[in-house]
Length: 118
Length: 154
Image (tube, rainbow over the protein chains, first blue to last red):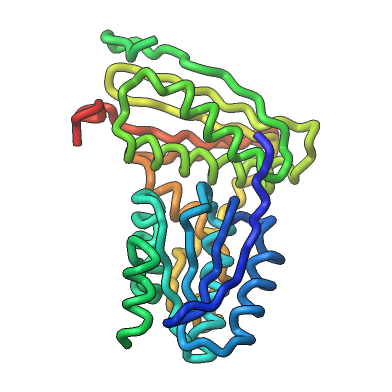
């Protein structure tokens, strides 16, 4: 099975910057994730939204990369939100306590509403 | 292929995976296929696959040092009571796992490295995890108890 390297597109929406993630979040994803986060951060949004609808695999190294993004967001007092996670990865966000620090929403509409509301 | 009805253990698959980055995904999908006829609930299957991926990644990285020619061996077997996945590498000495329990707040404060989630995830995903080894091999055995773990079960 070939690795589906992560591709990320950044767009600006009312409420925050959205990172559309496509592929696997593993050790190969660091460069793409860091570059996309930096591009989003350059827009100086109050919130950054991670769209996981196109992600079908996250491993422990990927969890570490998300922890790194969360640390960057907290350092610059930005909110980090996530949506489009499968039930399994919502469970992993709960087990790792990522969901205590990253707002996990089911879809983009609810995530943008959440980002705009606070 | 169905789960054995007696107490006898039945081998469902024996796999060999080259130690190359990303191949944990292949391992988890092949194990998922090997147990497909057991009727595991989707949530249980997803949890098993994550545990297999993390254990295989650890074996490839720390046991076999990502030498592609050194395979990780995976044996899947089941009895009436449980499902076992044994993942073996060719490492020596004690298996390398970060034994520190991950603490997200400590990681965010830079007190712990952002990594170190593998063992925690494995233990969270299966009912039992046993680690054995000698000077030539490490084996991680993942065990799921099958009582109630059929489609429609809890």
